[in-house]
Length: 133
Image (cartoon, rainbow, N blue to C red; front, side, top):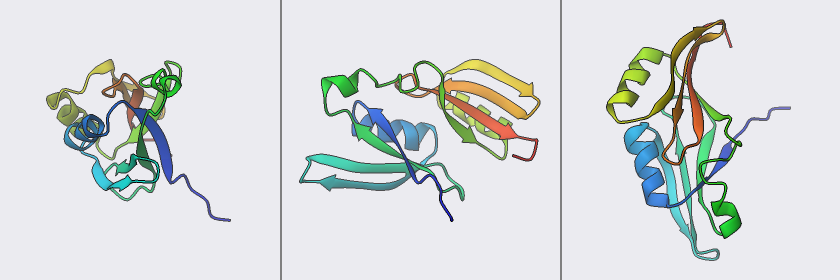
């Protein structure tokens, strides 16, 4: 059996502001942005640069109920983990582009990690694993 996570849906307020954040500030690649007329929505996929297979589906909230989860998809916990091969390179670039870190870098038994917020307040780890993960 061969399985992997392909897409993770991230509820957003607006497609274009989310694309701007993920592509311009985080340096993600815009994989697809196509209109789905049958549902009057866009299929917007972004992914980090590199050879990873998981991507984010930027899913605009389509109801008041969904809007309540924008920025809080994990109940205040770190939701997503952005793995890097060079923590300090990416940390410095992210600070320069205005990414807000809410926990400063620290060395942990598994590597170097810091917590940042996306444009809506979802929490992410920027992490460079040094323990072979």
